[in-house]
Image 1: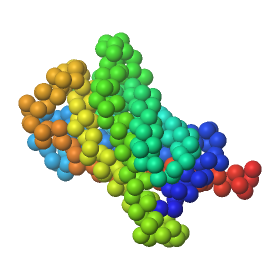
Image 2: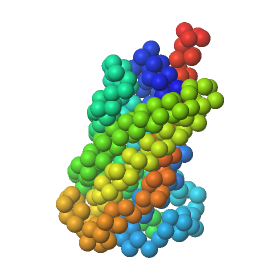
Image 3: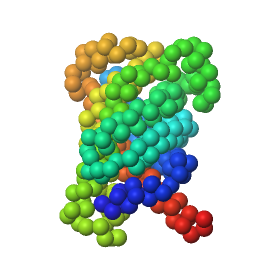
Image 4: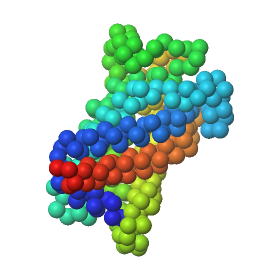
Length: 297
């Protein structure tokens, strides 16, 4: 897939600030498009009885909270996505320049893991705030914005801003690694079978990044469910445990292995769309910056 290889070549001529700008744009744009899927996924993951399907959850949310409900938690979600995007691509971009063997799957996976770890640590407090604000309904509305939520969480729960960090690291670090690895793997298959003509660039980018997001999310989804349960434990009407092992036991007791995959459908849809938009928009933003420098610098 030409855009992947072209994007990686172009990144070698971009400064760190250029890559950070492309990363921030990619994260913000991805969040804007995917927030409704994130809201539905989180609501399904933290719901105790699991009676609602994806469609029923959408109808219920739309009836009770309207269109705004689909973008609940969008502001902290934007800070989450921007900081995560900057951390992920800000680490992966410069390190990928050091790859002498462009087909090195092990090195790609390793620096993808490091990028995911860095991004997770940078963005995690915003993840907690986003999850809490998505979880609160119309009748339960303890937070009036990002800063109010941060203030109340720090004042009343102290370490809650990093609750669920361990399963998040266990999920997001390999998720980023698998995402970059699968992206490069499918890219090589696309390039070998369909060539590198201009007409195949966008379709190749879309298909390869979508498949990468789908497979990566399926691998780590149970850990994401564990994280969400830990993040909302003790919050409002949501019950649970703040520790990892009791949370796992509680989820297993309440529904077996299926309980860990509740919300998988919107999660996979979101993962495919997010991966596609994130990776493709980052590559094209890098390309746009490079062309601008070529024409006006």
